[in-house]
Picture 1: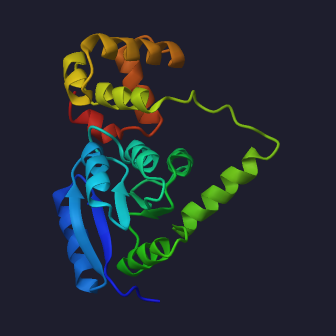
Picture 2: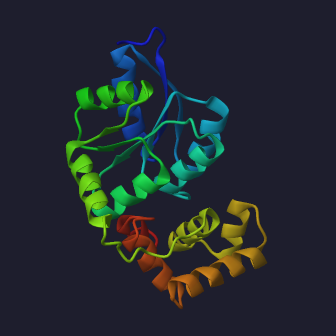
Length: 225
């Protein structure tokens, strides 16, 4: 059933050409209204709180704050928010973290326009929607947990995840402090806690961990070294 009013959508995607393409595609449909575009995860969190869109389309690989952590913060502030993750990656690490973040949809970026609009409509109605390959991975992850708990990675707090991403993206302590609105001393404490929790002893190790955990993409790191 088509809603009587257009479904409002916030696009969280750091690549301008992708944002413009998604906006053009959804606007052409006639049943959607793009209310904003975010270039970083931090912007997505702020815009979600001020614009209150029906649906948030969230890329995973966002600078400053990745899409999964942004999703977790959005839902912590507004549990009724509906986030659909868009990603070029669909391995178990991403799928499990997406599920833990609370997203109600996960689409691979190579999905068709028809599937994208269907996903938005289904999530708007209160359903979940996952690409077939994602749904299969979720099923397998749930099956693997039954009776055979995995040795999960140490769980990071929201603030620890923020600090880890910024450090892994090459930000100095002063830059991290300015971005998060905390003192340099507090940043240093968070870095030390991260290293203790993860048994990592240098920044390079933190960066490798962030890449392996899907917090940042390796391509992001390659642009700053």
